[in-house]
Each structure stands twice: as structure tokens, then as C-alpha cells.
Image (cartoon, rainbow, N blue to C red; front, side, top):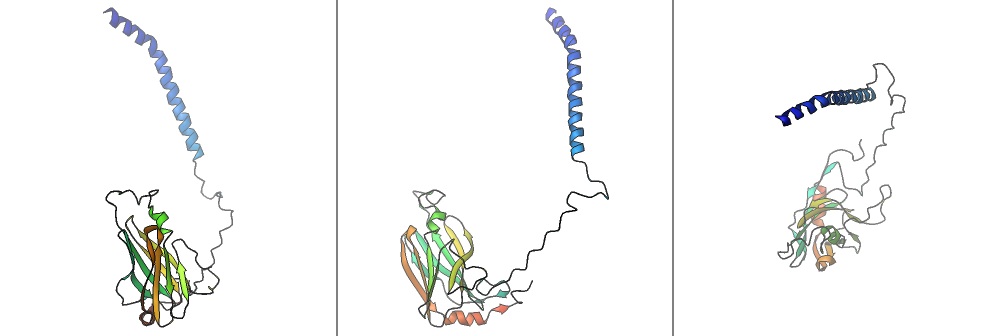
Length: 237
């Protein structure tokens, strides 16, 4: 009984204090809300906005397409060839898995398969001993033409200057994707090769693939290029 009486008296003494605190908290919250509402007030209709007197951005000049770049207004002719195996070890395999011929060059589909290691499944992860991104940088790919000319490139390699015609044949990757054990990259080469034997060359030191070659007759590409379909002028728009 005494304990209950004491608790009741304490609660009665603290009641005014609690009421004042609740009132203060409510008023503070209301003040903060009003401040935020004032800070976020909309601009009145007809009034000048912050951005109204700024000059309009100038439109970017139209980009001119060049023949040494991958076409954007043409469907290719498909080169009728089987998979060309370029290199293979117990751990990796690389092959040309498709060729698309355009009026000015070739799109080459290059596919790599990397065998998972059962005892070291983490070895191809970023930072691992065979980090795929790091390993890809050692890959090299090239073309040997019948007239003695050649073109070579590597992942992340140099592309020709946009506005200057290259002095010789070009070869570079421009798209691709995949996972830790398989990826496909799309390479562009310009110009079309001369008639005669055409060799695809690769090496991949990170996976022990020495320089290897596989070839076809370039006439297959030249015939497919004549079957390409031009849709509209490349420089249009």
C-alpha cells in the first residue's frame, strides 16, 4: 500500500514536467516542418524561374560515320564457315565462331571457354591467380593477309583516331561479354581482305597458348560482303 501511494505521488509531481516536454517537442517539430515547407516552396506561376535566364545548351554536332568504323546502317552477309579453333589447352580454348561481312570490313566473333578448376574454384575470381580481367590483357589476336599485310589487336587495345583514316588495316574489339568461364568478344577489321588465303592468329600467354593459326579463303568473305544490305546512308542524321 505504501509503495503504491509513493508511486502515485511521484507520477502526480512529474505530470506537469512531462506535459511541458511534450508541448516543447510538438512545437519544435512544427517549427522544423514549417521551415522545411518554406524551403521547398514552389515558384509562383508567371514568375521567372532559376533556369529561365540561362542560355539554352547548344546541340551536339552530328557525328560523322567513317568507313573504317563498324557500320550502323547495314546488315551483313554471313560468311559460311564452321568454327575455326585457334588455340586449345587442358584449361582454355579459343575459336572464331562467326564472321559477318560488310561492304567495308568484317565483324569477327571470338569465343573463349575457360575450364573451371575443381580444386581451385576461386582462381578466376578478381584478384585470383588467373583473374579473368588480368588474363584477358595478355590475349593477342591478329590477321595475316595474302599480300603480306597484317593487323593485330588486344582487349582494351588502341582504336584508330575517329577523324583520321588509318594508314593500314585495323583490328580491335568493340563489344563483348560473358562470365568467369566463357565470354564472346566482337572484333572489327577494316578494310576487306584481298583475295587469297586469310589466316587468323592468336596467342594467350596467361593460359599457356602459344601462337596458333587457322585459315580460310578470303573469297568467302568477299562474296558475303556483296550480299550485305545497305539500309540508308551511314552519315544520315
